[in-house]
Amino acid sequence: MAAPNPNKVLDPAKPWETTRRGLLLLVSSPAGAGKTSLSRRLVADYSDMILSISATTRAPRPGEEEGREYFFKTREEFQAMVDAEDLLEWAEVNGNFYGTPKIPVMTAMEAGKDVLFDIDWQGARQVANKASADSVRVFVLPPSWSDLSRRLHARAQDSHDIINQRLALGQREIEHWNEYDYVIVNKDFDRAYADLIHIYRSERMKPGRNPWLPGFVRGLAEEN
Ligand code: 5GP
Image (tube, rainbow, N blue to C red; front, side, top):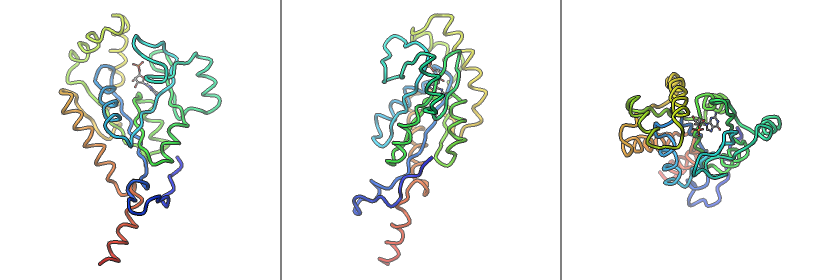
């Protein structure tokens, strides 16, 4: 992935606002573990982070809007995006295709913004392989299987059969927990959200993500 220009300091008095290297926060979990609520809250609270909106061939659920949850595509449209190499990654999940449009991610990275991805283990693995230095992988686990099942039923978004399919899929998703840099058990939303913020803030403080640091430290030495 193209690096932002580390010399692009627009306001020398505030280098931290203009020279940051964006990170890619990849969040996966079985459906119902709270990944979407945690992700959306983080994006709402941190203006330097944008949410990657995926393309999918699955039908919209009640309440979902084009361009907010997903870009809803036909199989032909999705295939055309794959053929044109418009997707950073894509995968088949439960008989539907899901993929990450490349351009918004590249644009965000060039502007030094962070990008949050709510994607499955296959997608997280592909992005991490393509951009390992920029990727941070977080897996969200439910506190128990019965809790997960209860949450999916409480949502009442899907039929009984679909819920059972999503639970089976979740079991396979969980098998990949160990490929992630961090694991959060979402027993209590506020606590899990605090954990996610800690991960994000710590990862942001890594020197490589702050290209203004060498100049800043040189300045400190000169001042001394
Ligand atoms: P749902 O249909 O419940 O919204 O999503 C099903 C699964 O697809 C979830 O695990 C979700 O994270 C994953 N997913 C959503 N968008 C993408 C994407 O762009 N790429 C990949 N690989 N998985 C995605």
